[in-house]
Length: 287
Ligand code: HEC
Image (cartoon, rainbow, N blue to C red):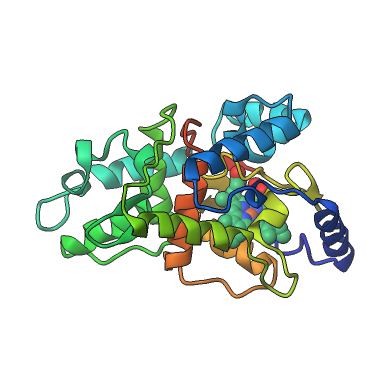
């Protein structure tokens, strides 16, 4: 992708496409109303892509294009994320030096719970993502945290996602003004333009899903986190949500935030909430 919007012409074409798209699902609400946002968001995408079933939006670029869908089905017979899934399963089962394990840090021993993350932690007053919870589990047990961008974190989240496959996202916004604020901050982050190219997340993933930036077909924002983490042929390996967010910020020649910065936690909360009802399908594979 580094090269994808390299060419000024692609960027200009995209900017033009963005400029003529007047109505966005964000334009609607004035008083915060996440439930109404989610309905409007799902309606926007299902009307824009009447042939794509609601559940299929979790397949990202593959949901947008029949040819790509076929290639992907072939690929799924020998999924390229299998090695990561296996590694994650082993890592998850292996006790820490103190004898405890990941299972001790999570509800239901960590099995089948991916759809509940991120959640708003009322004690801390902040959003807690699965990646963050995993590192806190490690640190709480005297282990060094993993990089948010690298293979170990991808493997652990791949395994946890796998145990939740088919379960619909079930993100809650508790009755706490700080939770609503986190959601609204995530929403603002998603629609704010930034970087030298002056794009928001929405410029690409709401206004132009299905369009190509060079070789890549843009994924729709609905269901965009359900398949994470993903194996990308272009990366030659796995990527976490943190890796994807920072990559998307670099693509617009912006300065990425630190992984798990409040803004990233909030935007993950926002996007996951909007995909409530759509099944977890991770780990995924992408071109
Ligand atoms: C210049 C366009 C562009 C912008 C702006 C952009 N992205 Fe992306 N994003 C991409 C491309 C290209 C990909 C890889 C192809 C695809 O899956 O869409 C991608 C992939 C993703 C994925 C993985 C989707 C999947 O199914 O593989 C997520 C999640 C994501 N972006 C989130 C974000 C967020 C959050 C922001 C704002 C911080 C953002 N993106 C801004 C271009 C963009």
